[in-house]
Image 1 (tube, rainbow, N blue to C red):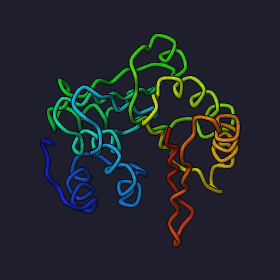
Image 2 (cartoon, helix red, strand yellow):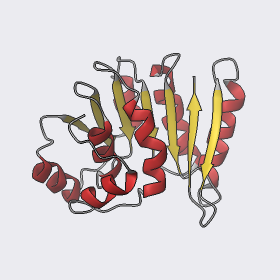
Image 3 (spheres, rainbow, N blue to C red):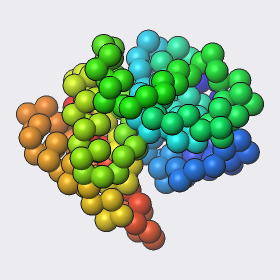
Image 4 (cartoon, rainbow, N blue to C red):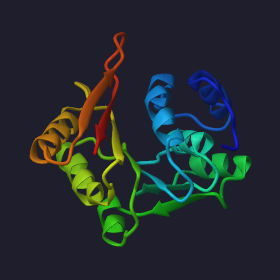
Length: 188
């Protein structure tokens, strides 16, 4: 790990100097331990990068030589500037394109997949279906906003878990008590 922060609050304080976004300390508490489990040569892929806050968090938590990849239909100036200021252009791969089209060209196992893109039912279902096939046994899918604020995400997750019972080892909904926000973990 290039950065050795101990607590999610330390990551957030540092990253907030470079970019903003809806990725909270609570979300980091779920994401960071999963990324820290990745071994050199394994891949973290994020669908829905927006301003880059969660992708930067993943890079900072990852061991050296973990592949960190982001896919988003748009490439925001805020993300570009944050990556430039942090010198991440040569360390984090960013692919601009519609996620399901990018998935058609993908061929590498994804050990940790984070989906936080289109929050509609159709969009989330499409992203899960396009990318989950690359997650091997022992891998994990994390999904943002699997709560009342995004009923389409909740429905897509429930259907995926229900239709993939044979390969889903664990399904956890991490929810904050004070507000409607959650992260969902699906472990294979």
